[in-house]
Image 1 (tube, rainbow, N blue to C red):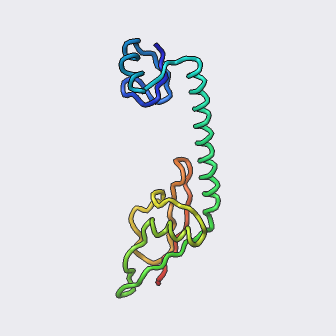
Image 2: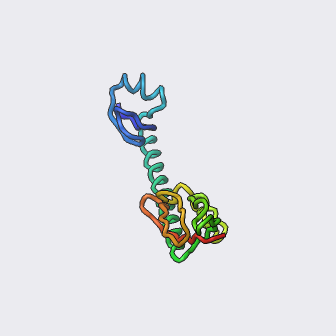
Image 3: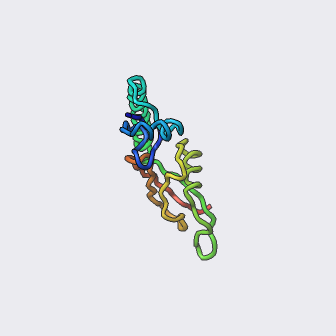
Length: 148
């Protein structure tokens, strides 16, 4: 019996795959647990439409990420930090603070989880910070850390 998988099944395949399984396995395991549906013409057409829709959404997300990456060059985010004894920075600047400053200063919605800081910034100066906007798109924003 041909079955279209609705979820990933370890021994069969990934979601959306059309696999051939024995009738008993399909009737007793795959269909009752809603892991798949029988591969009728109607279900095949629905699968095609669903895949087209998912591709369209993925393309839209990629286009949005590219548009945001085009806005980033030349943008500088200024973050203030207290100065401790001997001119050293007191505290650090994290990805969360950079995201908040970008929102306030340039109205950019950046996810703090996508800002790629190996470790928080602990010195004054100018830094290039990469931002992973999409698996295929990476942008760079400049962060100026100055004394408050």
